[in-house]
Image 1 (cartoon, rainbow over the protein chains, first blue to last red):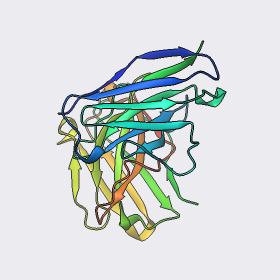
Image 2 (cartoon, rainbow over the protein chains, first blue to last red):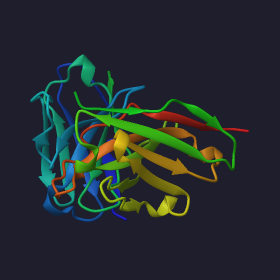
Image 3 (tube, rainbow over the protein chains, first blue to last red):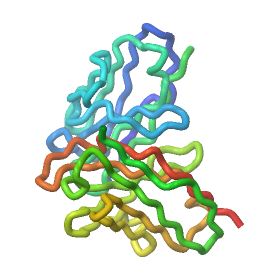
Image 4 (spheres, rainbow over the protein chains, first blue to last red):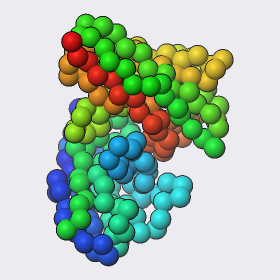
Length: 108
Length: 122
């Protein structure tokens, strides 16, 4: 099974700062079938990015994704108060569609 | 607007079975795969499998094979997940989520249900 490792586990930042989150699959992901989801406490996940770099409907442009193969990044250019949450990467090239363990972005 | 609305929370005894429903609106259920994902308290997301509501095909994560069944009732645009032989570590929020189109267009899980808490306790 392709294991997705996210780093760091926790990111402590202030509003207005840039957040850079990493996702490293143990095996290369074909055709960039890599997504990022945001989850706030008590809520369902929300799709932010699919195909490694495409923003989902309604997602602000401060969120951007990049990468390919075994190295992917989610960047939040300037953190807004509503961006403090847990972020999960997910592979969806083939079953099983596994998730990384998550990165928590917390307010410093 | 597009919605996935799940059934309410339940408490189950160890060894029992659970069944969660997921009713789709705002799109045609049989045009997209339905996935199920669970999240134990304080833990991350765990992908369980998918089903094709049009023909009933399924793929279950190896971890759950033999205990999980995913079905649908297209007449009411609903999908279901059943999990049997429940244990305390099956306590989790279970989510349904829309997957890719049956024609092969994939955008990960783009819409999610609100989640259903299943508590397994004696």
